[in-house]
Image 1: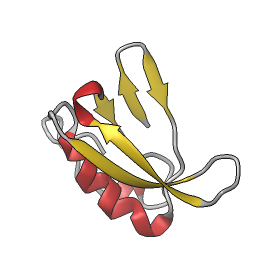
Image 2: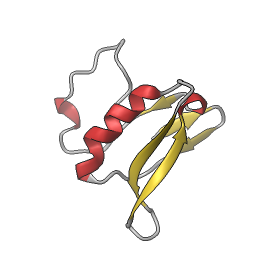
Image 3: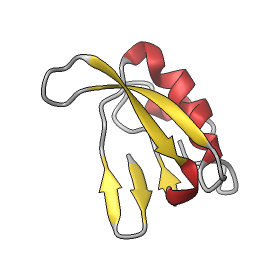
Amino acid sequence: MLYGVGWAQRWQVADDARDAIEREIGRVGQDETGHLAVLDPGSGEATTLVVAWKHVAAAIVLGSEDAGTHDISATGPYR
């Protein structure tokens, strides 16, 4: 999920793209553009989402069976 001022977006992440997505979301708030491999919600086909990170206030990856295995501290990046 991506959150900005007044908006939120939810995308499905392919299992093999999860690590790359988690690395990318570390750029939240930076004046950079990133590319996320996501699944189109209508077709289920892989597609690329282009993100202007300076417009994203927070990002998180939810819903994976291994979500509890990450060591996330209160001061660490959103995942």
